[in-house]
Image (cartoon, rainbow, N blue to C red):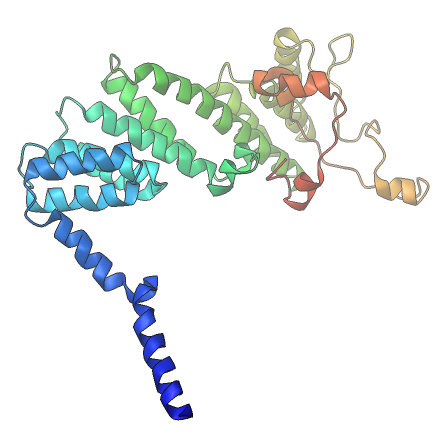
Length: 327
């Protein structure tokens, strides 16, 4: 009797596995294929529109790929390629979106909607530069690798150069302003790093690059300050004074300028706030911190509210444990 009971339980267990998802994958794939079996091109396109409206991005991508494979020269083939770029972008597969956009631009350089492919490629590159955590945490994008940001900048610039009257031109210009600010601030971060390494010539070159190539960005005053400090450390007093003079003339409220407009050099002046090492040793030992410049809260409207609400805001624990990546 016991053996019969065990056999019945085993049969019920094996029979009940059919409802579990990992046992039913083959049937599911077969159902999906049967749903589109015999579809005309119009049927495919209508189904894809339903997928897009319902935000079923993965299903839309599969149907768009099937449409192109079965009707490569059909009436909806080119439109399907454009919508595939969009579906990849919305599914957060930015590399695939960029590749699909590049493919469309290469195959259809004179298409009336090729400007859309450029725009979506720029958006995908911009989203790629932000990274995954930007959707959940406040990420300082200026500390990230600027490769994708540069690609986005180049793409939006190309869009405006080739299609200045495009319906996406106005939005592309806004994105360019944002990207210029990011790229300029990244150069200042690198200059501050070079100060830490005592690579003063490299720091000066980064500051000059910002001043020459990113005019009208909030990073320009920091670029001038970097030049003033770095040239002085290199013994190039004339160049240092010139940079400080331009800084005082254009940004008289810059933090390292005194009331007379004289530049207050950070290295070797003894005016830096005492470090924790000096406080711990009662001033017997001091570590001279390298020069550092970051006045985003003063000159960038995006950060002004932080300065007004919390002028002496300290770094958060999240900023410390992520080495400045999050704040």
